[in-house]
Image (cartoon, rainbow, N blue to C red; front, side, top):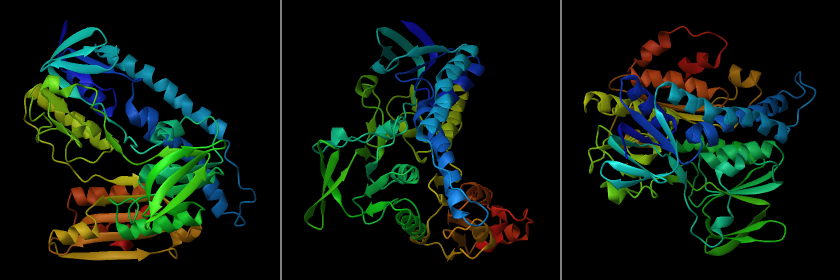
Length: 448
């Protein structure tokens, strides 16, 4: 048995943050992961996805300016894009492990499971830790209907050697929309099937409507209020069977992807042996991100049932909270700043703060500015029809409490609004600022 001040299970961004920060303060730290070091974002999510999107951005921009100075619209070479993406992915695990070792952190490769309140087993090695951090992230939600095993995952999509000619995404969340936009711009026929009345339920409904319309204009089939009941494998592909308005419906494609959400990846940890309480949202934690049942254990990121959104920057934030509490004792509570979220479609959609619906539910008196603005200069110079905003202002304090955008550059503009909400900058002060022009940020004053 080896003894450590801290054992970190998971090598993604939250686990990495905890491990390196604690090691820098002299704690003896071990980290383990059953998968290559780096976590979902670096290896199987945000980063590789954004690299692939880069190629489709070029094609989209050229299509919009075709005949307006651009003569040739480039095709996306899938194999070359994937090879470029893989350069980043392949370099990451070794780079991360080298960093751990540089900080005198012991590295293990294997799944961990609890064998007591303060000990875990990795393969045949037993480690004892004064503190244990669970940062195992999330995994795709299992499809329990017949043939659910035929559906590929987001990880599979990001590693496709060839792009299927047609595909179906089950679920109407951000993964489905982002990958559907990529695939369609690369020439595939794409269908999204969602059981709800509207997709992307956590985003502002009016802005989502703009994205839904843009998605359909792109040629993606968006099927709502349809419950998938099975997948059948055929000689030339797959048939997805569903129920819509009491009738059976079928959809066929060369490949089917499970984009029905993600769940905490904690079921294999044998939490009961470690006296760690959990629910379907993750490890049950208090305001210090400490297990409510076992004070030796903390949890961060997608593995924790915290108040944070399942986003990489939030996982990093929670990693810093936990590291501080391990080093200094529980002195730092998780008080989340505004958490901007982006759907990296083309056009991208971004959101931060309260939606109009949630703001009104609180009883807050709000002023709502909402408008589609394809006639604004920034939309016209980029020749795009999709540019809209909704800003929500607390009339009592005169400050912004929510912003929801769709259009070019909104993945950057949303950060201005996040700062404004975080620091409670009066809207009148935001309007008095001088912004560089012509930039996307210069539209902020007109959105208020």
